[in-house]
Structures are given as structure tokens and as C-alpha cells.
Length: 164
Image (cartoon, rainbow, N blue to C red; front, top):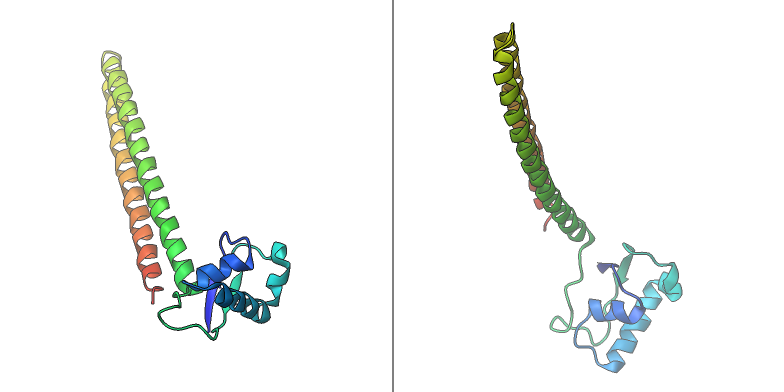
């Protein structure tokens, strides 16, 4: 038995069109009747929500050339998770680029402050502390970025194993 995960279908006809291709009017009516018979929940379509799993029956006119490959729920979920992770990766990259740009601004400000501090007593020590802080912050941010990207890649690799 094949299954189909509902997304934006508005009627049983939409489901039949998604599950089967090239249906004649007669075959579409048979498909809709078979879908309703095996999935009685579809009779009140308004109560069916996105993500509902529909069983796809074999209809008499159904043949391999006529049949679309129904979506395997596991593959569909894996695909959606993969897309979300790609979206998250782009978001993460953007956040780290923004962080690096802000950090460059802070470095400029701290270097200017360091020049001012050198002229004061204990200014050299304060400048060294600021420079150490800048270096440590950059190292920590680079470490966090690497850890985040590594974890993301591991999740993407795990999700790739869900594909059949």
C-alpha cells in the first residue's frame, strides 16, 4: 500500500490528481470513491489537517505507467528536515558573517581605545588586556562556528540516511 502526506490539497479530487496521473473522468471518479472508501476521514475534508497520511488504493485502471509514485512519509519528512537544515545553515552563516562584521567594528574601536590608553599610566597593560580579549573572542567565535557547522553537517548526514 502506498501513502501520501497531505500538504495543501483542498479536496478528494486534488488528492486523486496528486496520487494518480492521466486519469479520465471515469477513472478519477473511481479513484475518488476508492480514496473515500479506504480513508473515511476524507468525507469531512475540513477536519483533515496538513500532514494527514492518506492511504492510496490500487484502482482498476491503475497501472505502472498511470501511477505516480506516492510519497513515502519517511522520505517526505527526511526531505522536509533536510530543507529546514539547509535553511538553518544559511541562517547560521549569515549570523556568523554579521557577528564577524560587528566584531571587526569592535576591534577598530578597541584599537583606537588602546592607542588612547597607551598615553596614560598603566595604559600599556590595559591595551594588552584588550588585545587578549579581542583574540580570545575571535577564537571562541571561530570555535562556536566550527562546532555549529559540524553539528549541522552531522544532522544532514543522518537525514540523508533516511532516503530510501
